[in-house]
Image 1 (spheres, one colour):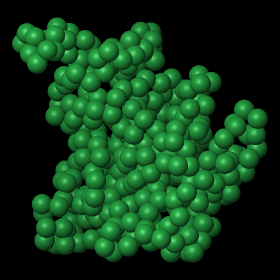
Image 2 (cartoon, rainbow, N blue to C red):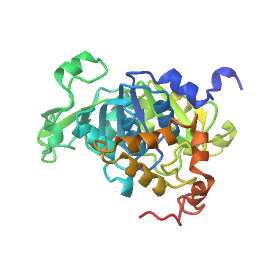
Image 3 (cartoon, rainbow, N blue to C red):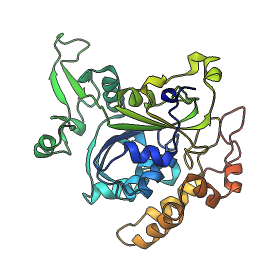
Image 4 (tube, one colour):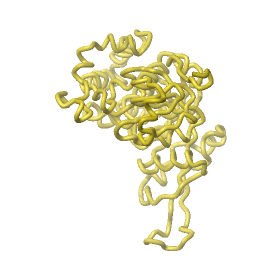
Length: 329
């Protein structure tokens, strides 16, 4: 394969090249599903700080980054880790303690913002948010918006419906496009060029990729392009959008990757127990980080520390795509 068509690099190298202090980044996945966890842990190990994060509705990936002090600004709809933490713990505490600057949108608004970025338009219209505090409560000051040209001048804009009172909608909301410096997603299959196939729900990952200036893909399987060409209709991400491909089996763990493994409810509870009460028991969280993140050199070493028994316990059933035996309570 010609070198310029081979984008396969080690994950550590990809993070070093594309994620810089102060970068505007986006991570894929949804709550306990397909978070790019190997990449998240590598960002934390490299101690990359002052990141501006965009996420649709993320889970442990977002919470680990915030807990490690990597995030200074956040734009998101929701953050939760299933039953282990219906609202992500470090995320909630960071907002409550003003440790990060934060602006929230509805799920639909965030989807539209990424779609606008992917389409190359400055905004898209919606009725979502009308009548709610999302319209009136802004997290970024005018001074901050002026200081960073990557932050839009307004959170949103409410205007008169230019087509009259269509469907009883006299007002509409305009939400601004998102164009991150770097988006990171985890997929089931990718080839060396960067063509990707995602099984199951895609969430906002496709729009996030197409909206971004650079894209890192971690994948469960690195396959030949001939394999992906057998069913081209199942390839949602063309290689033209991808900057780097990193082969990282179990790269979404401890979140779920449909068809491969489920989320690890035991690990997520362990994380939640370590993350709670940060104001009173910071040592517990530091011990967790030192053991599972800073104390291992890479994701493979992290998985060995967790143990094959856990990997076997969350293995996906071939018929359903998720673990049918895992205890989720």
